[in-house]
Length: 260
Image (cartoon, rainbow, N blue to C red; front, side, top):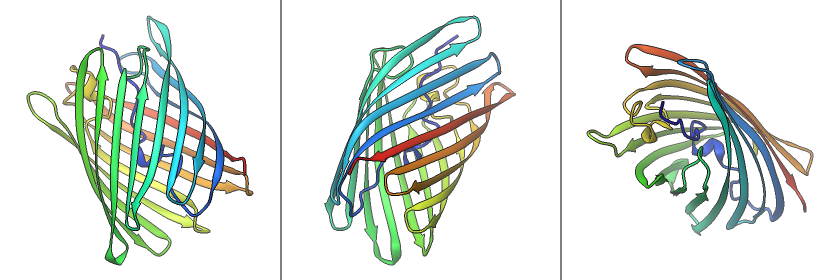
């Protein structure tokens, strides 16, 4: 069986540990997420991460170490590390950028991963965004592009985002709709629905044309002045072979501590 690679299922907006605001803070990051299914065999991925960061009005930078264990039925357990750097920069008053690079020499993460995204604010509380991703695993390169449009409605935020994966013989596409309800400005509850190839499929030729229906719920809130917690669950109904479908689940837990 081919390897199943690190889940990008919790799409970029849900993975981001920081958003630029008007504060200046040193932060400690800790968290955990997983991914599991039981067809056609039992498979569970666990990822634990920790790191430090600095957050300011125009620039934020974070360094993290991700440790994973992958358990598959009848196959010895594997584990590995990934070293990750996030960089956020406000380019102009209305333009913001995000850059990410990660390296791993293990079996369950891509050897190299590079992602970037730009946001442009428009009148009437609209934003548009565009970005790209590059993955290298065992010498094989994969690329994707994404674009989105966002809109704020008072305490609500809505985003449509699409991805295109450049694969042979045909490109494949994913579509996501995400909504947030803000509580006390910075706390929020988020609902996501999506359709398209699963995010790890571009690195598995057997499954690269298969699709999944998905949904996810995320809650992010401050606990006093020092802590910010994020908890979430995701579910996918995934076509994994021919007419066969499976249930796939994941859980997200993250904690940010503000040093000052």
